[in-house]
Image 1 (spheres, rainbow, N blue to C red):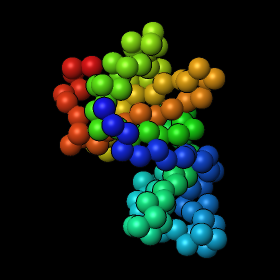
Image 2: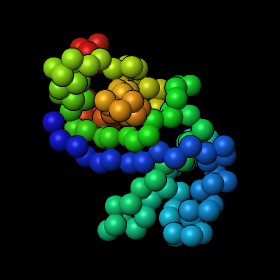
Image 3: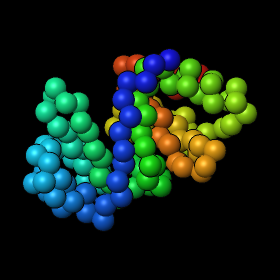
Length: 125
């Protein structure tokens, strides 16, 4: 299992409005907007990303960080080997991502996700 990216998630009452601030101050671009979450990105060579959201999707709490992995099942197996269980999922979301949430030892909510082209059948989990 390899981590593909780690992206901070900032709470926002109005993600589209808050994205204007980050666009103006840092020159970030809106990469994707789903209403409840706006994805901002920097120049392709910088690989900078920021997510502004009202919730975590599917009416879940907003995680502090999203960690994109290439093998969700391996990450889930590693979590369970440590004696922990997900607090949400694993689930395949309507927008095509497969994910689960965990709480780290300090209680931080973490979204662990894999794009559907990097996952196995969700019924396996």
